[in-house]
Amino acid sequence: MGISGKAGRPAVENVSQVRLRPHILGKDGPLAYLFLSPVLLILIGLIAYPFFSAIYLSLQDKMVGAPGTFVGLQNYLSLLRDEIFRKTVVNTAIYTVLGVVLKAILGMIIALVINEAIRARNLMRALCFLPWAFPTLIVALNWKWIYDGTQAGLLNMLLYESGLISNYVRWLSDVNLALFSVIAAMVWQGTPFYAMMFLAGMQAIPKELYEAAEVDGASIIQRFFKVTLPSLTNVIIITMLLSTIWTANNLEFVYILTGGGPNYATHIFPTLSYEIAIASRRLGLGATVPLMFLPILVVIILVLTRRMLDEE
Image (cartoon, rainbow, N blue to C red; front, side, top):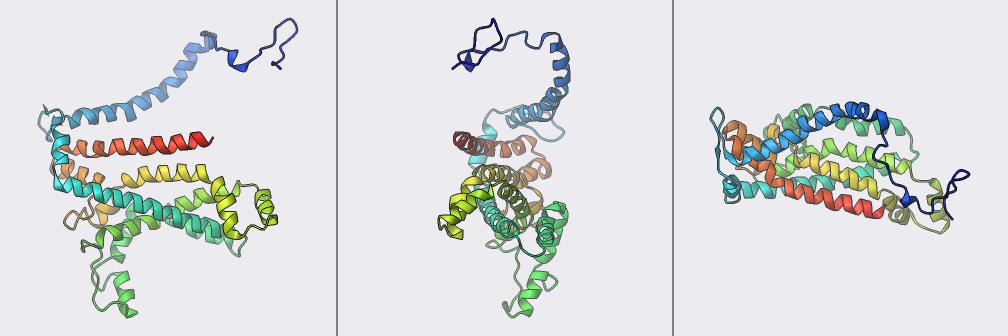
């Protein structure tokens, strides 16, 4: 049955038959484009121009204060042959994947706890979200003090006084510990964002679903996997997608805590790009480093977005 029209007009049998006319904006067309022009200028000036400028720069042998020489894909080939870059790829993968997974697991646990009707729930929520409110610079400097490899370090002092260690651990100068120490600090600050997003999603789940599952005899774990987790699928995808982008491009923790050392054990794409472009003043090669990561990031975004849209 079609959508009824007014008297004297035939009904539309299919909504898809409706077509927007070219002059739909009418006289307001120029005014509409005028209002949209600031957004277009911002997109071009802050996103499009820097992006294509970086691509053009990556195709040059460009030093600070000197004209660039077009070298094509030479910068990309040089990075692929470089051992430090290959080590940076591995570090970035570990830093991003492990950081995102840990934040997701801890964030889910915190959200489940503070979503329950417990005593002082509002206070617990405020305390849980507090690390995310601190500036990253302050958080990184505090963790550098905590990780100090002498008796002045809080972590060493606590472990030594409790008898768990006999020698002070150099958390940030040990090749085997440095990267995981940085990840722990990054996870501490980033977990509240996950908890906040998951908690907001849990608040939107109808209570009738839990009541029906309870009537059917579902346990707490079964209710989590059958009701909570499926209802939070889109929230989880969006949160992990944003966090993957932010984590992979995070510079502060690695730069402040280790500077990429020791022996390049904690170098990730942002710090390597900074060292090449700013410290070594090789702008062309420095611009190439983050662009090497771009295809991987685009694939992650497309896969997660496609899955989310397919579920919709």
